[in-house]
Length: 485
Ligand SMILES: Cc1cc2nc3c(=O)[nH]c(=O)nc-3n(C[C@H](O)[C@H](O)[C@H](O)COP(=O)(O)OP(=O)(O)OC[C@H]3O[C@@H](n4cnc5c(N)ncnc54)[C@H](O)[C@@H]3O)c2cc1C
Image (cartoon, rainbow, N blue to C red; front, top):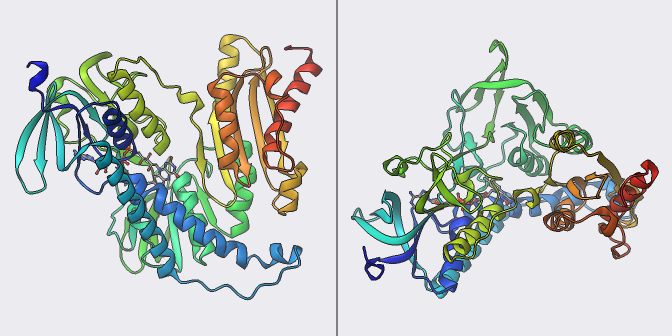
């Protein structure tokens, strides 16, 4: 096919954050772009993820703050019992979703992107099959295809959902009702954030985790402190090492809990509702990837660091994939960064992604965040590359701003190389941890050394001094051990 005969320069399949950033970046660089979306514009983040969940957390966080009479009375403040309207909290989330979805759609239209409502699939190299919402099926041609089809909630076998009494985050974000007692299956960031919302709004929560400890994906030291405040202090009944092997919707919802190893029935619960927060599966089914020789890995599309789709470890010509469907750090900002980067590579500006410097945050009250390597991975790297690993801890209780807020329960753990001071990772629990991690993420992206970072000036009094103290402690530790600069 000659250059002039293509329908588009780029067709993006999926209009979540990954697809949005890719389409916008491509159009802004003069390419003729179409984006195909089968559901609502904005994907998971805008409609069923980050946006509505953070709106619920903002409102329920206020309720928690105003209901915490002990905390308030330490300031000499005495408030009346808090009242809230569930419907209005839900409306706040829904209105925000509509506003952000509208802005995002207008941004693409203004950039000149053609928005097509329908289901896309691969029809061959440089060929996209399209089933429009009106049933019309056709094939479009383009120079480059970007897959950005995202992910959907994963519901393990044995669990039946009805969307009302047993549901996933897709439904939970609408806050249709407040169950008196809810079981949350999974203690990853989605389970923790909803536990934060539900406990603030007066629901009793049981948390069920199949792995041998709650919050298994978080740093163990951070977990110890965070679990004490976010789980134990809130009277959440957290049960680890148990599998919710059977969940039947209804009133009540019946749950069978089995031992993970033996699969023996251990307990049965009857609760008002169940939120299934057991991870997410890639949306790659029906994409017809096999027709061009692409084998997915449990549904995830294999890519290289430039976002080129791989078949037997070799790039497939003119095919790119970004976002959750690739299974790399499944977060909105990863998807967006990958989208921009894929287009940069299409434009001939060779760029690759640095996953190590991508931060992650859990927006509980207080927040949890991390960037870079876990302690376990850092230890492995240290032994492989034969360097000494430095670990220091900086506490919020030594920070004036945290003390002024009467919110001094918090910890930052910093991992670094002792020989050249390079920052390898950080894990934070405490007030505004999600904002604090960005500074470390930036220094990690630039592979900066604590020997320089320790001399950067931080505003006083701010929480950012927790990070400054960590850098200074790192240098002190190196001096004590007689290593580094
Ligand atoms: C409750 C919750 C809270 C979250 N909070 C955060 C947070 O605070 N911060 C953060 O960074 N991340 C958060 N995430 C994760 C974030 O939402 C995802 O990482 C992000 O949405 C991934 O973007 P994406 O573009 O890859 O895919 P998606 O957002 O899933 O978008 C993919 C789009 O493709 C469409 N699509 C699929 N197949 C086809 C097809 N064949 N044809 C046409 N269209 C198709 C889908 O309809 C969808 O609109 C949260 C997720 C959840 C569930």
